[in-house]
Length: 422
Image (cartoon, rainbow, N blue to C red; front, side):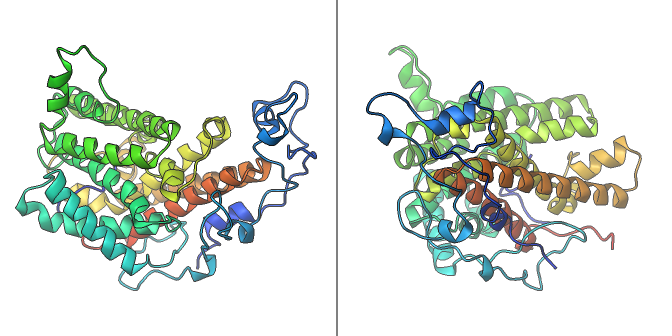
């Protein structure tokens, strides 16, 4: 399971976000539709980009652009569909004390704004302690060491306000409370997990039941800390999001819970999956719910039709997969030192492909690098073929999230250390 939880610790290429803004634009028709898309019959993407047709619909088109915006255009805070200025040149090498995995492909990012980090950290702790009573006093050090404020500011530098950042921060904390308390170190168990997850999921996707039973369900949302956190975080989220964004998030959380259940089933039967099976589980049990809300946190919306496009779904899947293998790599020694048996990619590769621990870890690095490059190539291709401002910004936001997620793992030495393979 993605490790960020509250359990105790035991020369770079150009930034990914820049790749999305620097592609040679695909030729387009006057209506803003890429000319290399099939015209007979219309592709689904072309149909969407053309917008409605008929008398009086000229103003309803999603895009009337001659070419996709470049990075400089995306950096101009000129309207509600575009982000505040983000400077790629501000990216610096990680601090000397950061962890360095040889051969890992990643992009350095600027240190997150310390004023925002401090404010988000203060607010989320107040929420966790006072509003949802998330953890007992003895877990406070672990909560602080998680550094969730720094994490979310690094992943969402274009958030217009602290309130927008708090939407992502509460959800991250709630997700990890469920993981820790239901699945992992703080009382978690694969036994009975399905029932616990189902009831917790109703805090995100409400139960619609008769009047006789509705009060009992409503009361159950306060029964334990994970459900209290889910309920509260989701309530804040729907105040900031559109209905389609909220439904998108619920869907991705159902994916996450399905992944939890697959891993729990393997734990109960002491099964080590094949590498491809493990990666299939990780496509569901991964970070995808976090970058998929990048538009909500940024204060705009990627239209549902464009989010649902197969090319966008592939980009999101690759981003989540690469980010989650980063977690496997940085949490490797922490998980080996924890009670019980923890599946992660190096462990599965070592057992299924009969490799040494070192060689399996290095192969897991290669898997991550391949996923990252595929993510960047697919995102760049989609950006070039879909000249819609919200698509350009969303793709860039996902890339920034991927880089920020790595930066948090690499620099959180309270939680993580690396194996002594080098």
